[in-house]
Length: 163
Image (tube, rainbow, N blue to C red; front, top):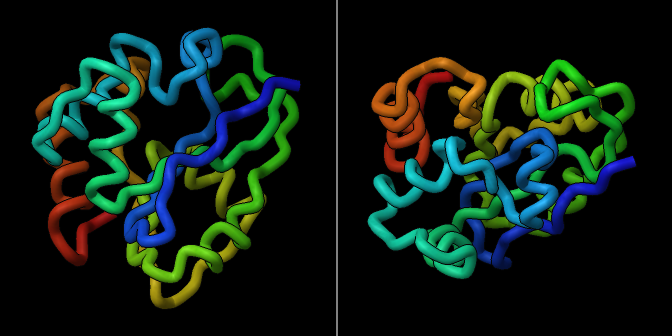
């Protein structure tokens, strides 16, 4: 089975962004959202106004804004990188992570598959946390960059974003 990455987080993280699991390219680079056409990091740079030239800068832009990043899946089998290609999955201990991060106010799913896996495998929805499924930043999701940016900006910056 392929393995995901450890979370990027601080004890004061107020937003948790959840993906499914690393793509083939991300696994090879050992970096979240490592595919050069994935819009995740450019979107974060636009919203949070920080540099993303190095992986360390990418971590810092999240941590300095109290944003945590992880995947729903700890281990998985998948043919290729498509979200439809998962054949076996083991979730991360997200219930424990959520309970330990008492400042969490929002959990944002990077695409429908991440939300589906969370609902099916974790199913934990504390009433004090908003849950929102956002447009996937994957290049396979054909929504344009500006549209993805608008959805993500609303979810991260504004309160009461729409799913």
